[in-house]
Length: 220
Image (cartoon, rainbow, N blue to C red; front, side):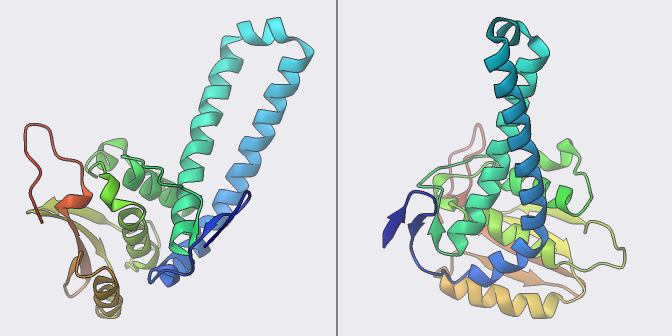
């Protein structure tokens, strides 16, 4: 294992690296474009601050732009970190994002030209530290691979019965189930899956999820 200031900690490829590669084909071009745009915005704000610091610090619109850009870079950085971790380069350095699953699903939808309803995203639970990057990557992989009769963003749903089941419409559910079986073995049985005629659901353990308010976490 070695650390590089620009690349993070190199850990070697993980069993989910092929899933990250498939998600990356959809996500990386969008992430690069958005990071370039956000970086240009930061540079513009920095120039304004250097030229007229007093005015810039009193400019509510400018300060709001700076906060929006900071939040945008944070969510884009999380997605890049998830892809990197799965490919064996840890740039997250134990960083934990409770809304990490919502963030990756939302950004992936944007990359495909879709827009997720915030109320729908709220159905996705917050993540516990044990989920690390695995839960966001697995759900993103299912969405990236899902094929529906429509060319639009695939339909997905969630349910809980001791696990969180994330289900997508997928015409090649059987082939995806074979991959899920391999991932389950690689993760020592932490995940489960259910394949239907045109759907695939992956079951994430309760230990990967933040406990819901008013309920004690169930042991898995």
